[in-house]
Every structure is written in C-alpha cells, then in structure tokens.
Length: 169
Image 1: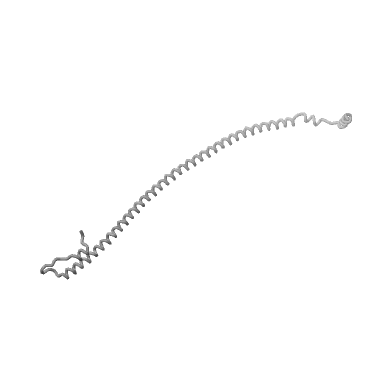
Image 2 (image 1 turned 30 degrees about the vertical axis):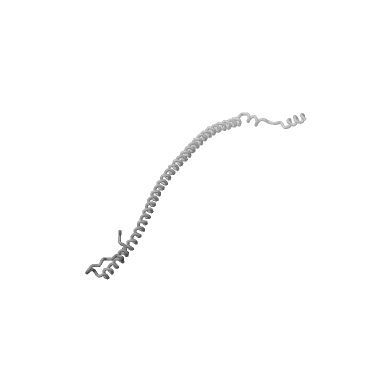
C-alpha cells in the first residue's frame, strides 16, 4: 500500500543514542510530506487530464468513424446517382432514337403517299388533256363542217313567217 502524506506526518522514529537531530528530521519529513502531497495532487490532475484526453480521443475516433461512414455513404450515393443518370441517359437516347425512327418512317410513308398522289394526278392530267383535246377537236370539226356554209346561205322570208303566225292565231 502506498504512503499518504498523513502516514509521513505521523511517522515516529525510535530514539538512539547519538541519533539524528529530531527537529531536522521533522523538518525534512514536513518537506517530504508537502512534496509528496504535491505529487499526489499533480498525479490526480494528470489522471484527470489523461481521462479527458482519452475521452477526447474516443470522441474524435467516433467522429472519424462517422466521417468515414459518411464519406462511404456519399461515395455510394454518388455512384448510385452516376449509375442512375447513365441508365436515364440511355433510356432518353433510346426514346429519342425510337422517336427519330418513327418520324423518319412517317416522313417516308408520307413521301410515298405524296409520290402516289403525284402519279395519280399525272394520269388524271393526261386523261383530262386527252379528253379536252378530243373536245376541242370535235368543236373544231363542228366549226369546220360544211353545214355552217349552208347556214350562211340560208335566207329567211320574214313576211312568210308572219303570215304563218297570223294563220295559227
């Protein structure tokens, strides 16, 4: 068991003939007691500081562990975001390609329809042109017919027509 300052203070030595000076010994013991008391106080303070430092180290280790976990979580979240954005970009590209294909196919289909309509209109215009040409030729034949010359030579007797009209009345 360790000595306490009180043990030092209460220590009694047996006396011998030609022994040490009692006052000097007591004074020295007093000095040892004070120094020992200071050492015990300093030791207690250092233990308290050590406990505080140990608590701080534990606290900082906990913070470090939490930070490392947070960093890992952030890295995982960043990786998840990157993977999700890659998936989303691939989906957007596929959707855009589908839309582009659909638009191109619709445009090609419409171009085919327009091409067919143009061909149909060309056929109709040929038919119309032929019919119109035949109509004009028929009208020209009528105009060139000899009957017109006969009409020009035809004379109307107005007096005779008036007599006929009066007879019928």
